[in-house]
Image 1 (spheres, rainbow, N blue to C red):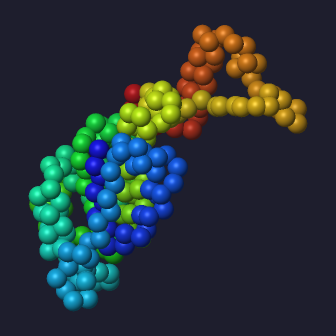
Image 2 (spheres, rainbow, N blue to C red):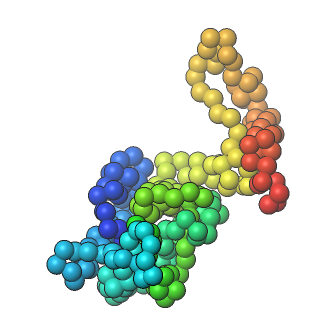
Length: 226
């Protein structure tokens, strides 16, 4: 998989891909992540990528020209399955969407900034808009990192145990059940006996019951969706 992330503040994206699972995935060649500095596509001598909004009002708007030049350049090098704009009013990102995107070959993630992008970018240059929640960030970089992380960990070979991703919260429409590790008893707090019984069928039954109970309590909207 190849992921191109377009940003006007690319240094914000250095840390997420330089450690842990994502770093290993990149090092193993399972994914290539390139962060593109949008200012490289500005023809302004100050490398500006934003301007005042037509009609007035507070805040600056990202201009269409550098974005168009950047996307055109990227598309000249490979065919992209999706060009996704990070936006607070976009489609709500979910595990189901992460699963869908993990099957793609090439993705562009466009990070908004300031008051957002010129609307013509959204009308003509992108294929999808995505939000990670009903709140506003200073820019789309953190949202892009979240989406990239969620997608990359699903790629074959990224996790040491590939079944781990299949038991994550939301994969089966439920949140994950409680998990425990050693010691079996700590300060009088004990691990549920069924988990150390060695009885696989009973353990799976317990986990499913706990997942149902926890989902109903913490994410009741998931039951309504079902």
